[in-house]
Image (cartoon, rainbow, N blue to C red; front, side, top):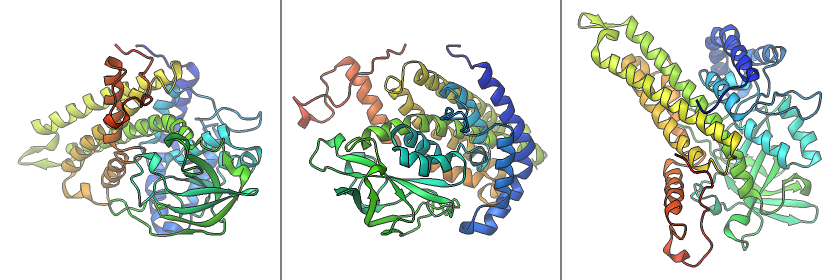
Length: 426
């Protein structure tokens, strides 16, 4: 095995598994019932009780280092954190209980890396404490946001402030009362080179001029905090709320998405594991044509295929996490794109088999399967659609063989579109 978990990582994984057994699984039905009753009115009361239990065990902000001697958080490598993400992915609310849920994880990472002292004090500190939630405001309804250079929201400097005008959507979780801040990406200099036009800025949710527009559902689900349009009309934000430097937004977005994709993929492997467990349990409980469903050759084939596919996918993600830790995100860019394509597609096959095994119940709210399918299917678009990741993988592979290759013939003689990756895979 080319990688090895640290004793600290293995110990924390055991503690997380025990916490899931003690606090998450036994409270799953009650939590979902509370969430359904409250909808957008607030968080389930059970959430705070479970978060207190997690903090008492030291299972808090495990994706971040200690920023100060008193701040919560446990520094783990991408490799050590990956199997923990898998466990948290098995139940929808488990990540939030440990303050390790998206989009807060990625937002906290870039606030820590690029935020001013004021931003860290006013927004990062309460996020670390789990007192508030955040949203990431990047995708736009009127342009193809899979190409981030298309982003159209304007961020203009006026004195000691920046003024934002434009429209976003799929700012997931922005409708939750606990969501108090957004990170918005827009153009500060449309005349700069394509990858230096964009900047990121922190925007308080209660800033004058910020409003909520349409509220799209995902396969009929709104996921509690929704995925709403956010309309920016002359929204004024202090200049020190800019993250990094003007023109650095594209680079920050790439830095944010690397670890985030690992977390997403490992959570999705947890979803696939849960779907397989549900499929087997159902097959052991139902009989058709004189035998248990579990005794049918077809079902056994589905179970075997699912086990093989999940284990192969896990190894792919763990290897990618190891590369990120050892050679860096840039050198592991092909693998990061690869897992983003492979893992959701694998999980969708497993979930679909589980739905089919459950029959009509599989497409209802009485099992987690329909919600799992909707969420995982969305990931084939979120954080970059499959087609874009495949395009970038193919470009890197071709350029290893021919560094002069251009995807667009019109760029002949221009600077290369991407550098060949320095890490040579076997």
